[in-house]
Image 1 (spheres, helix red, strand yellow):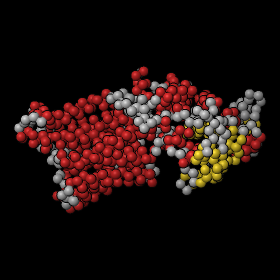
Image 2 (cartoon, rainbow over the protein chains, first blue to last red):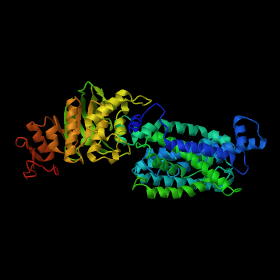
Image 3 (cartoon, each protein chain N blue to C red):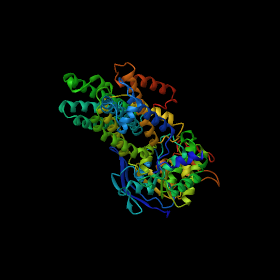
Image 4 (tube, each protein chain N blue to C red):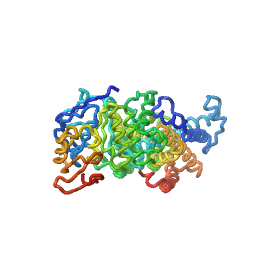
Length: 351
Length: 272
């Protein structure tokens, strides 16, 4: 008890926060799954070859090419996208005080997707344009949802309903564009559902890195402030915290993270919605304060591990065919979310 | 901890959207005293407290604190000067210790680590509010009175010279109400300037050094509660007569029209 007391008073500590168990286990899992993702596939690569590739040693040219051009970019993309979408969901849920918020539910993913398609339509030969266009798309939809819900009364349901409407609108435009010009997307189904097969390149990952870096840095910076925001706007303001600015910044960081992920793997749903719930449920046993910073770490690793696991399953379960990873995520995620709803304390999950 | 911070409000107008709630408030709460703001529902008590706390910028007029305009100060400087206790608050899942520690937010440096001084303030706030035994408990699991004391401890940890409290005794049983008022009295003894909105005139007359009556967004009376003008003000603004009872007895209210509304020992709060 004494120990936990010391831990609790160090809420704004500049010292590195003690890594909680609920973040360490997913981190180890992520590392393990990343190695598996490099080893397993249509062509088996031995651990010795992976080690040689990582250390710059000698290995067969085919294995080197496979690892450099396919496995590593895809593994990195899975981990980054899973982490980004999960942290995005956590930021959106905490900032909007809404457990139903997530990059897919409030229309952020669809906004990013729409601008990705528009970028591809206008500048088909410049990948950087579509990778950059996702950011204003995601942020635009996030701001629109906040604005609409403010005008219509910011009830929890209004935000989600506004998001659903914006998502439907954005997706309709995407469908209209892609129906007219199917050549602008490599795989239309994989883009709408979300998937990594055949679309991930190291260049695409690199182009998304600024979004990820800005989003993760912002999330870490805002974590302590989001803790104060949980006390309500009036208390937060009276403590000197610019509540509205912090909320907007958190939503924009969430949008940037989701935008980066959409530019790589399309509009994956569910990860951003369920992972924050999973980590909150687990963390409650370890950290009675539900502080945001450890939750961010836990959400990042849990999301990365979940997407890596689903991608690994998607490419091995029905080999040589691959499923878009979004299908598997929904297949696993939807029942799990229902389980959380049914087993959570009354109103806890949705309040 | 010099104490005796002064606040001066002149020709203040404020409101929400198109609605104007405060219409020319002139008010200078006595420094180092406990001032109770009273008035009918909708008279502007909460709005006045929000403006004084720096949460609602005025449309016209001035809010000066120790000779400086409150709204010209940075958010942080304002939060170091004025503490605010809202009437309703959400119930986050966290321990009382962390909640109280949040009160130190305006004093933390950019990196945000709690110093020994911060910890001393937190311990002192917990001691003053009698919440030491509750520190490791979940705030959501506490009783209404305990929760109120924990939130008060957070306000004390903020260590401001001016404390603004909006209905700090609302929804509490009588014992918890008196606990809260006792804490306010001890803060006043420590030299803090306290302004509390209270619905209960009984408590207002018993605990206040000064009484300020709000009517339709204006100050109708401000002064000591035991002067005849205070009773006249209450009669005019609230529509009830107030008369001090026998030695040790509680105040006696009657409707101004003359219908008996309360007994000497247990005046009901409804309708007051």
